[in-house]
Image 1 (tube, rainbow, N blue to C red):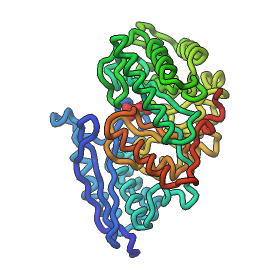
Image 2 (image 1 turned 90 degrees about the horizontal axis):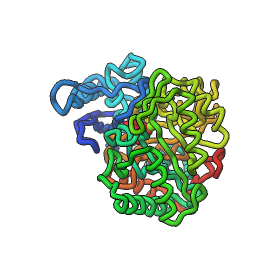
Image 3 (image 1 turned 90 degrees about the vertical axis):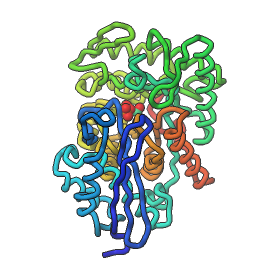
Image 4 (image 1 turned 45 degrees about the horizontal axis):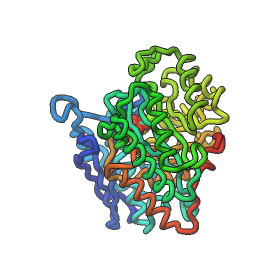
Amino acid sequence: MTDTAIAFVHARRVWDSRGRPTVEADILLENGFSGRAIAPAGASTGSGEAVDLRDGGEAFGGYDVQHAIANVNTEIARAVTGMDARDQAALDARLIALDGTPNKSRLGANAVLSVSMAAAHAAAHDSGQPLFRYLAGKDADLIPLPQIQIFGGGAHAGRRVDIQDFMVMCPGANSFAQALEWTAEVYRAAGKLMAEAGTLAGVADEGGWWPMFSTNEQALDMLVRAIERAGYRLGEQVGIALDIASSEFGRGGRYKLALEERELDSAGMIDLLSGWISKYPILSIEDPLAEDDPEGFAEFTRIHGKSLQIVGDDFLVSDAARVRAAAAKGAANTVLLKPNQRGTLTETLAAWTAAKETGFSAIVSARSGETEDTTIVHLAVGWAAGQLKVGSFTRGERMAKWNEMLRVEEALGARARFAGGSVLGRSRA
Ligand code: 2PG
Ligand code: MG
């Protein structure tokens, strides 16, 4: 047994940003170093995601995680005790085999992921390095371009608008710190404009302004005005990123836009989005078509894939095989990487490896249900993903990530390479 062998595993219930229970795992190594991680949770989930195990029943709306926690404290703890925390691949393989299902439905992806990530933290502590450097070796230097939400919609705002995330990206910024400064100004400007227009109604699930608009275009117009009011050159310094999250309102090739009382087919949806792309400084679109519409995805990519970042979230669910299949079909050109969509770091990293092999880009992403856990910040840098999506520019669980990235950028000093617009190589910027 090495001294980095896992001596003790313990999970407990903690609470996420929506006030729901979630799983936190602690791992203690034989040599006394330890690691901790908390599983996040999504609201608009892809049907191909690994299963977030919930207890059901009355308590906490059925969202309790006592079973997932018990799974960590009994079966999982027994299976991984004695394993070397530095061998992430072996540890994750053991967790996958122990679960025994294709989608972690027996033990729960939340149970499995908290252990997978806690082990990485413990190994990093043992190595005396921050997690990003432990993952990347001394070569870690790529600081991601952030996607930051200004308005929240869809499932995150009572479906007040159909589109889920209206975000900004700052390809013209010189550093991550500057990208945050610019975003702060745009967020403030958007709030002021909405207050002036009488359309301000608090904030959505991820902390973006809650938009009281009667069309999706009004939200886009308001976002453009906010970027201009804050004083940035549209598209060049600050551009727009959208998460349409269209699996939420599209199925079987039919898309029901509630706000505009319209039902579109796949071609109609592509036309609608194409109109927006020609009118607004859009740099990135996530899930423009539904998860069950790969043909639509391929058609959209055929039209826009050379000039636009087209992201698969529900469509690809951080899955290496799906990334390869999508690439072969010419559907999408970027994968969103959410560790809890798969349940282990190894499988999530495999999706990024598949993406690189097929010419796809990647964005490491948080979920709508988050906590103070900042593991994804370290994954984004340690894996050199180039982009990071965390939600808005308010609320502790979001700011914990942005602030952690500021620390990483500072720690890298002159060696830090801010990805900026370079990761949008195919964009019009
Ligand atoms: C998404 C995420 C973050 P959720 O769809 O990309 O905005 O939302 O975690 O609810 O899936
Ligand atoms: Mg999404």
